[in-house]
Image (cartoon, rainbow, N blue to C red):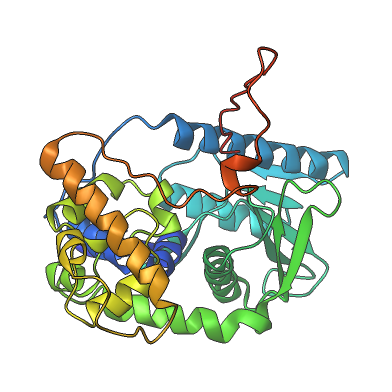
Length: 335
């Protein structure tokens, strides 16, 4: 999302972000209007993901070259106008595959990984183009469908014909290329696109207030995650309670329990019966909140032993200690 000559330019990534987190859309809308500054920090995990993504794309392009396709690589052209012009030239001259081409449609702009030539007539002649995008995930996510749906719609306006399919290229060695029919997702894409276009016309601060920064999977790759984390801590948000689920938070919020402190102080046994889930699970998160609140107030680690200890269960199933015991600690690999 960028403001260019007082015009808001939207991208395929904005569609994906909108699907994953409306609060991020609000923050980036404020950034585009000059009211916020995006946090800058070194994240080796994101850098590694970017490097792996580029490597994956290069390997796919190499397979196209090995198959005899004539490749036009436009990745070096960063200027929007020049990139769009060179993409149109490559399409008109019938390039077999266009890497990092540039497409635009009004306020929308995007750069699909690869445009593949097909033997279907279009405004260019006896050929047309379809979109292929390389993704590290082995399963296609909703945000990817939206991104490729946008590319297909932009491509349809350029070549005078809607692509029949789009492709997601994964690292799966057995079946790397996943094919999808455009018409199967067109209505869904148009709905989300229309909603985003309506949303960016709103006041960004009102939008941010209406969409609280709930923790979601997208936080792992969001540059605004530190901002949202600080807000949740300042608000003492329920999501700070370890192990609490979103369903449990919603239930507690309907009962005016919206902070970790408030949850820690409600009396036991609970005086209400939850609409969803067992009451025992709510009592457990209440106790977890109490332990965390105590640790916060005393500035000391707090733990409690769960009683009773039951023979042949839990840690009681471990064998007796031996001098020959070997302990192995494996660090997690995010990839």
